[in-house]
Image (cartoon, rainbow, N blue to C red; front, side):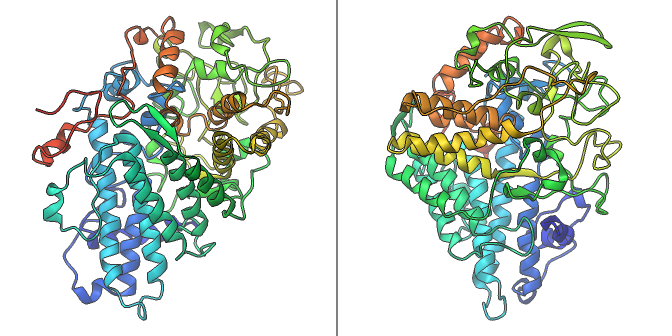
Length: 588
């Protein structure tokens, strides 16, 4: 069974952790004695409460769609992969500000994200305090549960560090009254990441290779996450400009070693299986947020409310709000050359598959001769193109404000609209489809990245990248809507040859592959910051897009804006103790 089935007890857990959740409509009713608090059943409830936080639901700070666990706004709209979408620029302006780099410290979506992550850390700390005091002869799972809570807490801290850079560290040993005494500049980015990675590695030693309940943290999850954190840590940054000043090869060797210890996973046979519920806990899923539908919890169930706003809108059968739309630049990036390899200078080419719009029923695409990676139509819903297995119409007029955002919508993360797995009604497009925190393709690419930057085994890096590309090559291509005997586009994808595979070329290939394979998964902006190329990439993106997306005409990436500003509400909470990130006006 899915781990979220044990979240049925979350109401009691919320009571124990001094927090509640409108999602399950449970309210705290009183307090429990210390004897009950240290019982096995009570500890399990506290642990379940912390796990439940993965879905993004807490009662403290509104709906998860405003501070999504999927990071669609923080990690993709902020980058070159996606537009905000919705009903125009003013529809959730806080996200528009993130997209156009007009973010200020009073942005509500930033304060909500910060507050929510610390609320979830508080749940982990509440569980750890009780676990630390428990008798291991009574609580047989004590060591494992402590390790699980530390991995979960590490996940939330990692999110904070890569979003906000300067963050306070609070563990289970600090009294609540002392929270305001902890500054946000006690540790550097590198020190935070080092502590997180060390805690993950330590936790792995107390975890089993597999858990009986799907979704519960195991040793492989801890090792895989430690590898990801070490990869970030290896790129050392100037604390003022955030420029990458050095790359630590010893840490990269540790990345390789950690990934090699992760066992029992593989790629799914077809890329599109990533969006089918039948495969969601399959061989590729290292760690996923578990969702469910029709589970008695109200509305559609414990579905992915982080994506509440994002199902296709306009005339689509989803009837959604139509936020989170793929950029034309992302579409252009899927073009390939005569060998089926990526075109690194794609921005020098005309836009691929430009839409001519006559009316809702009459649209056409021009400049469709170039070859493209088949993942384009696995990821992007394009007008006139078959949308998953939906037979009634092609994707057409499925964007709400086409004058502002164009005509393309996201295809990832949705089940096909005629599928029995899709909930009929509000929340639009909901299903029980899990959200992948780490999948096996990530690990292959992380290892390839580490090997390329070490520079000693480029051949293995090429094999790893080609393995990911081979899966795309062998997936079932999208077919023409009117003639299923034909492909929907001129698909061509090839494997990288050994000839010309230098470190510089391999680096370009890896970074491109990371974008194409993981597009819209919430990681793109953080990748750009890790590599130290955010300003370069975003400046080129604004220049390429501003003629079509006129709201980009004044958008600029200023040095120091790699991280989000510390929210002013949190500065006020600290009584003026917190320091603002470089790149933003200092707090007075």
